[in-house]
Image (tube, rainbow, N blue to C red; front, side):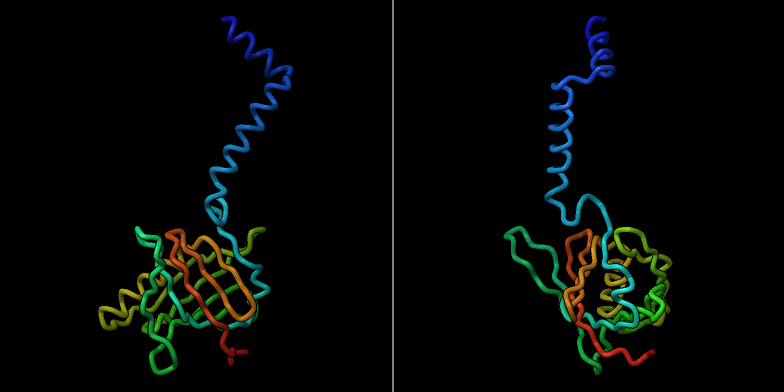
Amino acid sequence: MILKSRLLDSLRRPSKGFFLTLSCLSLGLLSGCANVIPPCGAKISPPSSELKNTKWELTRWNLPPNSNGEVRSRQIPQGDASNPIQIIFDASGQRLSGSTGCNRFTATLDEDARGFSLKQIASTKMACNPQRMELENDFLYELNDYRSIVRNGDQLLMIGTDREVLSFIQKPNNTK
C-alpha cells in the first residue's frame, strides 16, 4: 500500500529521479533500434517527385551476409538481350511499372512523410523457365517488403527487411 501511494505521488509530482529513469528508458529503446537501419520497421524512400519519369535496371542483387559475414551476390540476367528486370516511375509520380524479365507488373505509390511505399502490386502471369520464375517471385516479394529505398545520383538501392540489397542503375526513359 505504501509503494502504491509513493508511485501515485511520483506520477502527480514527477521528481528528478523519475525524469532520469524515463530518459534512460527512452535511450535504451532508441539504442535498441539503432542497430536497425532504417529505424525500427519504418519504410523510407525519397519523395516520389525525385523519381518521376525515370527508368531503372537491376544490375546487382546482394544477399544477406552468411555466417562468416561474407556478402554474396545473386546471379541476375542483364542487358537488353536477357530481358532485364526494370522499374519505371510514371510522369505523375503516382505509379510504378516494369518488367520482371518474364512478366510485367504495376503498383501504386502511397506517399507520406517518410517517402513512398508500394501498394496494389499486380503482375501478368506468363510461364517462364523455373529459374526465371523463382527470380521473379523473389523480386516481387522484395518490392512488397522493402525497408528503404535510397537514391544516389544514377543509382537506386532497395534494401529489404531481409537485408537483401537490390542495386539499380538509371536508364534513359523513352516513355514521356
